[in-house]
Length: 201
Image 1 (cartoon, helix red, strand yellow):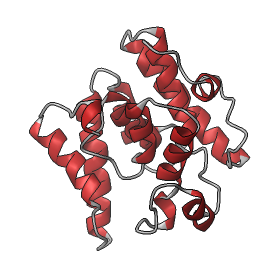
Image 2 (tube, rainbow, N blue to C red):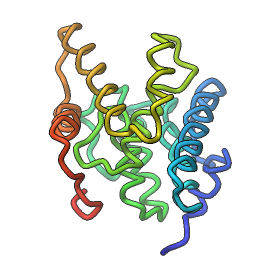
Image 3 (tube, one colour):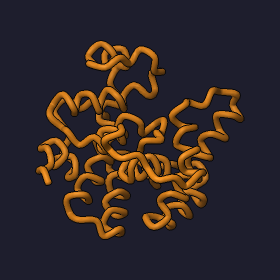
């Protein structure tokens, strides 16, 4: 099993890469997401390496959240012009990490699609999607969020389904389009099908 990249090791302890663009309030959110993921990874009995990966992704998902979206598009090695400003930071961060030598594809997919969801998520992707939505700093529906947190980590699939369902309902209520990736995640969860392997990402 390969060693974790230094950026991943650092992020698991709250140390971000030098190219991070995340203000104080954002970093506090990242810390809460990371703490949840570490708790859940340990609660699953995962090996220490995977617990570190889960804690790291809690910080790395928003490592470029406060950067200018147009600047991220210009700097990226993958096309991001089709994405709205509020979701560009995920794929841009995954691209920057990959260019820097991070080769953990499930972790990179989790970061790239943490705002939209993806039918190709493995457990780290599902857990980040859930933790980002349920972290205790979010003020809307705190009792509902707390109840779902209490179901983790054993109820990962059912909690992920509840979260993606809430997001789909919100978009439909607002008359906004539902991204294909979000519907894809919903369909996989609803069918209870097995997850795509990392090689299929």
